[in-house]
Length: 383
Image 1 (spheres, rainbow, N blue to C red):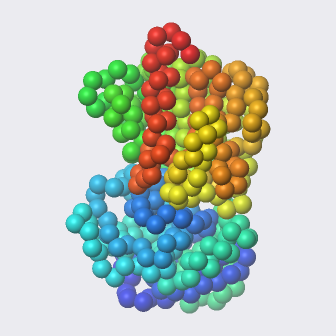
Image 2: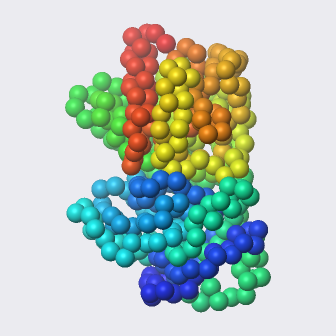
Image 3: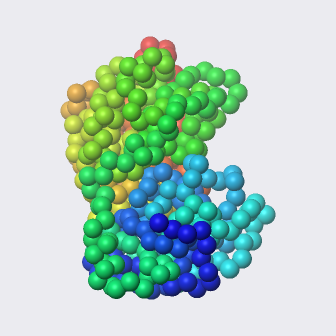
């Protein structure tokens, strides 16, 4: 689908499913790629974005104009590979200038066969998506960019969309693994990998928790056999309406009384287990500068997001669930989207954003302390 090298200024074209077309030059591998066009508003942290499994089958448009200045290193990836389907930037850096860099961003994209495009007006493209909504897109570079426009548009319109996409099985770990506690271990947690970022179990390990990361297909019986003090459900890609297995495991965990914490996709799974519905956002939330209000403390946090779906839930009132009364705990200040849920007794909660926050910000790191506190209460026989 793609070749390993991109000659300077090889032509490239971006085609949206509504027919809008932008021409630029190749950035990364030569070839063609398809995915959902989404934009990320972060000015930094592109390496963490590229390696976040939640971006599987998405073409990421960076709203910041200058990308690649700090190159790529071996310390910042959030998984073992790049997951984005394609990459769109306005002005890639011509040089790498950072003491930690070991290679350029363009080189990294070529290594992983990621087809990208540079030299396009990403501001205009973002404004178009904000008006028209997220949609399918194709990037074509090299010989593929010279094909007739009607042929390229037809290829984009024939590509799969995100609604109804069941993707967790494509990004989850193939085998369970353990992240040991840093310092003295006082608890163990099973983390269900729906597309987990490496920083997430590290945040729990920093707090003395050993984390057993397990594949998304694990049953509740397999999880319970590990005798966890808590269960965590990770971020991940795809439509939560397809994740019936994860919802069943979440329901079993809630019925067991073990403390539960979920983030991003895990928040949507929690919502479905509570009996709520999910829906697709018009253009989603992505980037590391999204304002969220904690309705309990009334504190406003700057948070990291990557979600195109959300939970439909009543804000400002408790509602009944099979596991006791629940409420919305956090909302986005930009559009009032539900950003967190919790059982009133404090035994289970979730947020729609990323409190592990690699590459930042860290306003929401307290949520790992809240999970630790719930585990300690449970160990003492309380909820």
